[in-house]
Length: 260
Image (cartoon, rainbow, N blue to C red; front, side, top):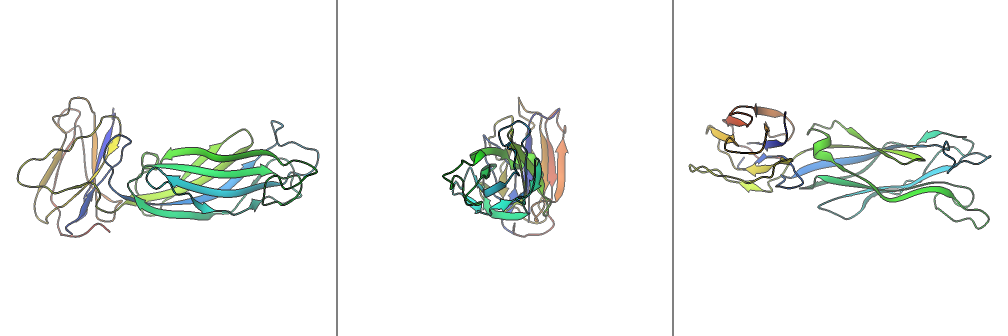
């Protein structure tokens, strides 16, 4: 049984990425893109219920991460048709942003409600009645590196909900950059990590030289190790249970290249 993972991302110029992620240890850089997909709103529990048509609005779809806490996204004012009743799905696929850093946690910031009068794109603009069943603020987080493997643009849905609204975001990511760089020498080197997570480094490698990566002297972690290629998502080597429950990989890069 795997209790934690070590991902080694190795590309091949002078900078190659030996990657992974963790809440406790090092993280190699990643490039991710996040999208807003849709909103589902309902009046089943009474918070949004009224005798007339339901007029739902998804006012904003924002995000930030645990490295770059600047909020980004789109103020889209997505609406269901004003003649809709009861439970509805609305919104349109919208790219919210792309970032490159060593983050692993995404936070969703939204504002969604049922409008009764006044502007459909702003909550509480009517003095005669109050808009209701509002859900807003920083409402959900996810570890995107744990939730999906690095890929060439394959999106993974991120769904979060309360009793009135279900929001779907999606994201894709891959390894990139050279943060947490290790330069191997002829002397064995070590890099500390904490059990229970996924850790990563970038490394300098030379074409034609065989490198060994292992945690065979570990005492607490059943690990799985992957080496990713220069594109940031293709597995070029892997290891599991090579020395007891621990991992070891011998890898010889065939060219010298740079992580893109």
